[in-house]
Image (tube, rainbow, N blue to C red; front, side, top):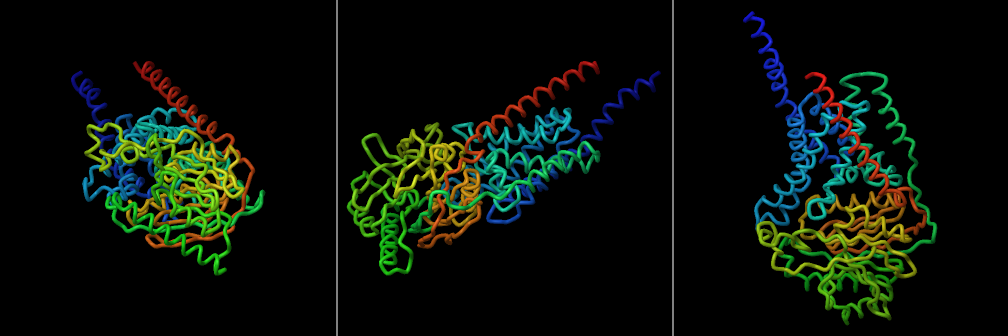
Length: 511
C-alpha cells in the first residue's frame, strides 16, 4: 500500500521536473527570436528573419503554463526592443544613462508578456496559430494607445518594406501585414512540430494570399508635381540641439538660397513646391527672412516651424506663398510624451530634460493642406507611426503624403531608417507618393509601391528635386483599415474568451 501511495505522489512531481528542464531552453529560444525580429527592420534587407522569429517563438510557447508563457513573451520583447530602441541612448544616454532606454524597452516587453500569457489558452482552439497571430495584433494595438497614448514604434509591419508582405498594406494597413507575418511563422512552426493536412491549409492560404496580391499601381491619376526637399542639416549634438534653433534656421535658409540659385541656373528642374523638414525654424507668422527666401524661390513652400501664437507653441507646418506669405498651417496632433508634452511632471525629471519646457499645443484637425494646386496629407515625424493621422488625410482627398521630420537628436543610428520604413508602408497603404524632408537625413522620395526613388545621406546639407505622381484612388486600407484592425482585436478577444472557457471546463472535468 505504501508503495502505491508513494508512486501516486511522485507522478506529478516527476512531470513538473520534466517540464522545468525545458524552461531555460524555451527562454533561450525567445532571445534569438527577439533579435531575429529586430534584424528584419531597415536599414537591413532581412525581412525573412521575422517569420523565422515567430516560428521560434511559437515553439517556445508550446506545452507550458500561463505564467511561464508570460515570461517567455517578456524575454522575447526585451530581446527585440533593447536593440531596436538603442538610439534612445544617443538621445538621452549622456545625461540620464541607460535608464530611459531600458525602462521603455521593459515597458514595451510587458505587452509581449501579456501576449505570451494568452497563448496557452489559444492553443486549446482549432487553428490556434491564427488566433495567436490575431492576439499579437491586439497587443500592438494596445501598446500603440496605452499608456499616455502609447508607443507604436517597432510594429512588425514596419520591418516588411522590402519583402513580399508589403502589398498587403493596401488592403488592411499595418495590422494585416503584421497578422500575415506572425501567422506565417506560427503556422509553419505548428506544421513542423505536428504535421497534418489541416495544419498545412493555413500555410497554403497565407502563401497564396501573399503571392497573389498585385504590386500597388504607381501611375499618375491627377497629373504630376515636381517637389524639392530641403535638408539644411544639423550637427550631431544630441541634447545640445536644445540651444541650436538659430543654427538650424540659418542652415535651412542657406540651403534654400542655394536651391534658388540652382533653379535660376537651370541645373535642377523648377519645382512646383518646396518642402522644409520639421522644426527647421521658429516663427510667429511674421518672418521677413523666410518671406525673402520663398520669394527668391518663386515657389510655394511648406515650412516646418515651431509656431508661436497667443495660445502657445505648436509643432507645425505652414504653407508659405512667394507673394502672399504665411497661410494655412497644420499642427502636430500626436505629441511625443516626455518631449513635446510632459506627463507626470513631478517624476519626469528622471527621464527627460524637457521638464521645465511648457507643453506644446496639440493640433485638433486632420493634416490636409492645399498648396501649389496640390492636396497634401501631412503627418509630422512621430505621427507616421499612428495609423489614423495619414488615413484621415487620405480620406479627405490628399494626393501626396508629406512626412517632415527632425531626427537630428538621435545620432547616426537606425532611428531615421526605422521611421523611413513607416513612411514607405504608408505610401503603399494609401497608394500615394510619400516625401520625407528630414532635418539631417535621411530625406527621401518614396513611390506609391513603397520603393525609394531617391534619398540623401545623413548629417549633410542636401536637396532632392523629383517629379512625383499624384493619385486619388482610395485604397481598401484607407477606407476600411480601422475596421480590419477592429476585426483582429475582436477575434483575439473572442479567442481568449473561448480558450479560457475550454480551460475551465477541462479543469472542471478533471476535478
